[in-house]
Length: 292
Image (cartoon, rainbow, N blue to C red; front, top):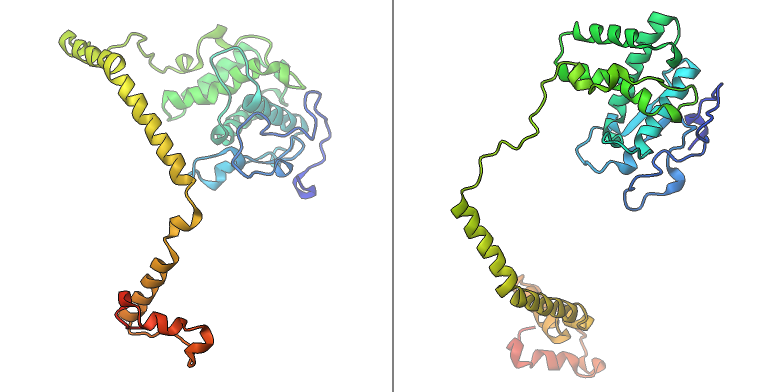
């Protein structure tokens, strides 16, 4: 967190502290220093420490609130994204994926701009079902697929779902009486029944018999082989260090052979006796045929 990354907020959050870590509930990349993580008080959040997709675009690795001029909208947006990223609620919606945070902020800002244009300012207390229906009609007039319309309706559902985590409050009513937003947008529903053709009984019967055979007959041998492999791997890892690289004699012979093939000699003393006869011993060694 740096001084240049913080914009003085005119409205403090009643829910979050400026020092709250944005990625507090997520698994971090190995080696990440928690002291460098983005804080709620920052207006640019770095999400890269929790994005493990190596092909993800850099633009999706940060989320920027500095362009939101209105302090109420900026605070609402930050609390909205923070809560959706971290809060575990007893429903099926789940938490926001870090890679989707940028898109979530964009759709929220689009919705806030619509409310501001209609009501003169953004205030969740001014939103009612009629206003949501008008926003739905506006989205359906666009040349986009129903799935995109549904994505644009998410802020309405999330402002109700995350209302208790927003200083200025969220929607105090259930949008569209609880109808799923993608159904409201006109997306076709999916059948809940599994329509995959049934596996023929002779086929599944044979597979089941062999599965039981593995458990009843082969499992003992499989577990024994696993134990033997584990013991061999432990013994291999515990072998002496020099054994991993071969003996000194063998490595010296390999080195001399490589130099001989390259047409190079070996630097030796002109007076072998000063080395205790080592040069003579090497030259007369039968393994090297005297070629040194």
